[in-house]
Length: 342
Image 1 (spheres, rainbow, N blue to C red):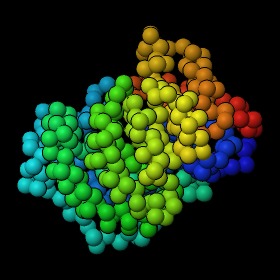
Image 2 (cartoon, helix red, strand yellow):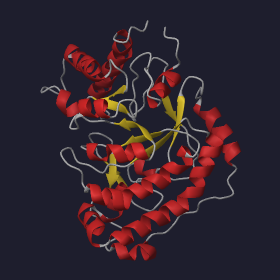
Image 3 (cartoon, rainbow, N blue to C red):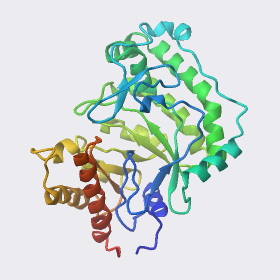
């Protein structure tokens, strides 16, 4: 077996160092054969109802689950905010529970989770996705228009939300001492970003900096989740502390990004389901699926700076079996290709 724990092997990537083997990461859960390079641990201060069909997030947005994939999205045509200038009248800030005993919560959460911090890196999150929350409040049409017609109101609302969440972030970092700080925000479609670089830098980059600061002040690397074609934002991401980017989809020029930002950012991805999905799905050929994993690792992983991230959304038997095969192939081939004993 290799000499490094899954945790240390993964954290090497954020320091621009060579891993012992290609790690497997996915936000759907990366544990396989008793190993997990990353596990999530965070205080239960916020409601995460958006991950439950019919649940609400902490700002009052109702979510519904897709029956095929189980993924949740804001309930269609049920928007809280019609005019961004009304945000102060509509938005209700939840109880922040400033009297929580974070030290005791951490001890409880760690015990209940069963996480071995020597083996797995702990990831925590600030709990706010600025762009997605704006869209959840208003819908895509009105939300995108607000960034153009009323950027100051958008900025004021997002900063007020960060003001509210900031004390919790600092306490989370202080007591949970995460190894990674996870910021999520999908600002892009497959072919183009939803917003211009100017809008990104004017409205959202200052918010990301604030969300990252509790971690970067302590030298904790940022992992950033952003789907779609977001390569024009890479330099700004690096500047506010991002060292891992997932799901690093292949609609971006990943080879060019690896060369341009070598040692500065790790690509967690390189395997897009729509590209590798068998035409006969839900029937698939196991060897074809395994070969797709090997191809991605060969293309992106041999010189470091890469963690394989890929899988199938869904709760069917076919999806579960496909994910098992994908993880199995990454686990073994990701070691073989790096010359690490299995």
